Image 1 (spheres, rainbow, N blue to C red):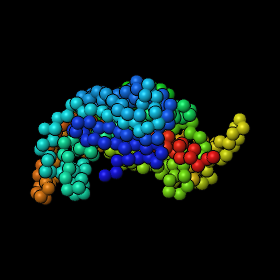
Image 2 (tube, rainbow, N blue to C red):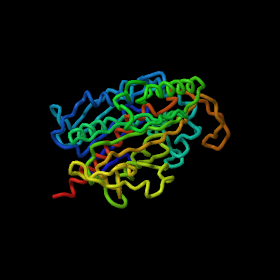
Image 3 (cartoon, rainbow, N blue to C red):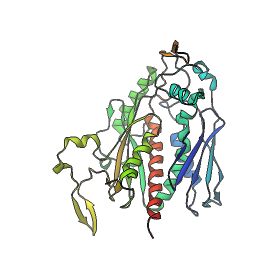
Image 4 (cartoon, rainbow, N blue to C red):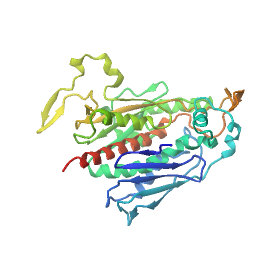
Length: 358
């Protein structure tokens, strides 16, 4: 099972939802980087369960332990191992699906591929695994901050409730001011009400996370197969429940003429810029110095608190009953995950770019 991402700034995650722990090994972190453990914990707190009425009520404080690679608060240049202990598993909530397949889950595909699966919370297929990514992504953010690069994400849609403003029209500092993580108060209130209403109906709903990466230098990314946009798409679609990725003008760009869509170059204060940014900061798979912005669509959480028809491992028709503790909408907790994966992509490409220069 592939559990690694990156080429130079590389992560390998491990653990299952109901196992003893989850964690990550980070390689390629430059020696001397100050590892702010308070910041790492804050990032994990943004993703952890049980943080509001519209998230799963599983109680995990997600306190982490750095097992190696850090000495006196600084990275040593050796692999950094971070472990997060699981504390609030309720495996008995999943005993009823030990031999049955939940609709739209990985139960059937894992069983078919490996001949065995950890049915407790989905095992390795659980979104619990993403806590390890957020821990590693926090370190990537610490590195990028030194280079003047920031990564910010926010919820721009929950079910049918859309935020009809661009990131330039928003104060992204307000993203953490509400439990939905939408930086527009009026829209956030509507989203929260809709998600809570959905929860009370014992159902789930999907949404969209938008993100912007600012301060990226010109030249990150590789032509043809290792394009920056392709790697961002891969990283985002590796997140549980992600169903779609678009950057720049995305699908809406198809309605424009080329004369409207082309980003015209100009010189501003001695530097080359584009007057518009339909390209989303990436041209030919390589960053052009403009803001990189993208959107990630997430499906409704597959586990619903309603009975559904399904089959068991023998092909017999059964009824699957929803049990356990699950998010009615994944996007509020997906915000730090999107940021983490974006930071890991940019950090890796930064080091790849440096490796090609004398």
